[in-house]
Length: 104
Image (cartoon, rainbow, N blue to C red; front, side, top):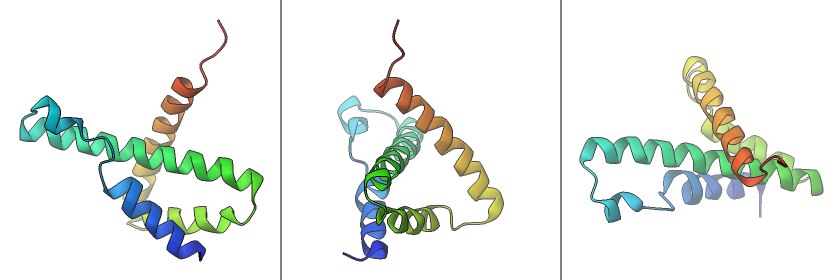
């Protein structure tokens, strides 16, 4: 599969779609559902990027996939892209803390 096709598929399947749709089960109002979906998409995006970074360490061909993925996500204006990048980095740190808790 071409890197561009794989990157676009990852965006469509794991960023644009809500993978865990708890909002319906929790019967949230429209405003809360919108905030929930925004946050879920952010963390889904962070999870995909973390997986791509991990995979490219093992398989250098995934660098092209990650680069195309990032272009699809951060292609908006520089201001919007930099804000989203900051939010994604924070989400990645949060996920890393949950997935690899420090030894206590």
